[in-house]
Image (cartoon, rainbow, N blue to C red; front, side, top):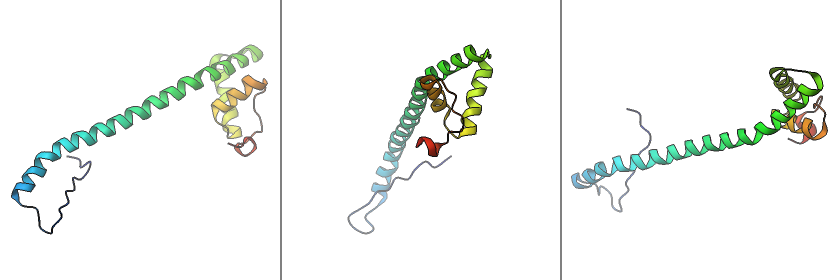
Length: 119
C-alpha cells in the first residue's frame, strides 16, 4: 500500500487523544483519503485537458507552415514537419513559434535564438 498523505488531528490539550478519538479518526481517514484522491485526479485531468487544448491551438499554425513548405519546396508532409523541427532545434525556438514566424513572414526562421526573440 502506498502512503499518499497524512491525517493530522490536533487537540487543544496535551495527551487529549484516547481510544474513542482514535476510533473516530480511523473512521474519518478513509473519507479524507477519497477527498484527497479526488483532488489529485481532478488536477491531473485538468493538466491533461490544458495540454490537449494547447496542442489543438498550436496544430493549426503548424499545419499552415507545413503547407507553405510543401507548396514552395515540393516536400512531403513528413519532410515539411522535419524542416520545421530542425529549424526549431537549430534556433532554440519552440516549434509553434517557428511555424508562426513562417506563416506571418513567409520566412523559415534561421539564425534566430530565444535571446533574439525575447522568449
